[in-house]
Length: 459
Picture 1 (tube, one colour):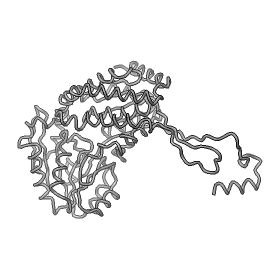
Picture 2 (cartoon, one colour):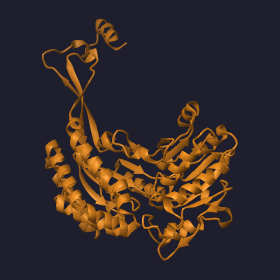
Picture 3 (cartoon, rainbow, N blue to C red):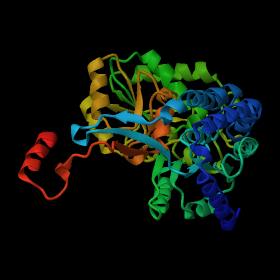
Picture 4 (cartoon, rainbow, N blue to C red):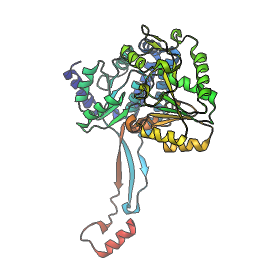
């Protein structure tokens, strides 16, 4: 798609937005209902596309993508009307007699740029929130997951007119042309490097952005933790989607007194959950492409492997791998892994561990396994990160009741549920002043009596 074609799409969206059709809340709800019906119709096709792109099983595809999208749709269909209502706020006596309220207003034409690792979920969730808020949306799914991108395009074209929701497929050239356009809001999920480029392009038009990035999310295992449970849940969260999850535990940071016990439990859980030959497990996915396969393989230090390490280049598969005796100077600790490698780093003092984490770039997630409530409070208060779990991993993103997002280098802004509606809405602060009374004190000429009355109201 060339630059002129993309500009034409944006112009159509802006014209449609200013027709005020999407300001009607019932119109938004009907759109969400239609999207839900269509996704249910395409469920099998979506799962097949995810299998083609990432080797995901139908169970994992539903659990981590389709099911979560349907849940977000159900939530927004139920709550959009209440979210869109004017919100009355307290009016100070100095504004007597008037009514103060906040009025939600859609930004306008929104661009959603989504990644390849959860290509359906991370395209549809921000779309749902943006539509609920009353915007028009242009979607740009990843070129690395073409099967899913094509299904998304098919769904959207069946559901919506092209001036309301559009899908632009393609690669870097299309991304470049899109970012030359003026949007009213940009929502980007992906790498920090590309996120910086998106923010730079958006700044030319002073366009607000939400950036959902990533980082090295630590998983602290404190000595009071239930080691068996910790291992079970860490293995699930780390190797889900072959580690290609932005909130996967990037590395374990554990008390050195429990490291050996933890490693043995991790080995048992990998064997139990993935079998003796994970590379032939049909429910274990694959790395997205050769480029990422090669990058991940370079991070594996064969001398530090304590479990796994085998690869199948033809199938783009890497076994669930555990590495011991890792330091922060190792290659695997220099970048976000985004693959099925689990390094284990130890600490002698929890305080030193907290200091080290805070010296690094702020991660998208942090996980803590402990039985000590004081330690849980200390770590979650003193460490800086986007969000996380105590005694579990990754599940904090699967709720409509809390916003999900990054912090610092791991991103800015949040979405899901009400937080998503808020992200794609501007709230106008309004005062409705009554005409039957007009206090004279604010008008010139100013008098001493007016000054004394003003102090009574504003002190």
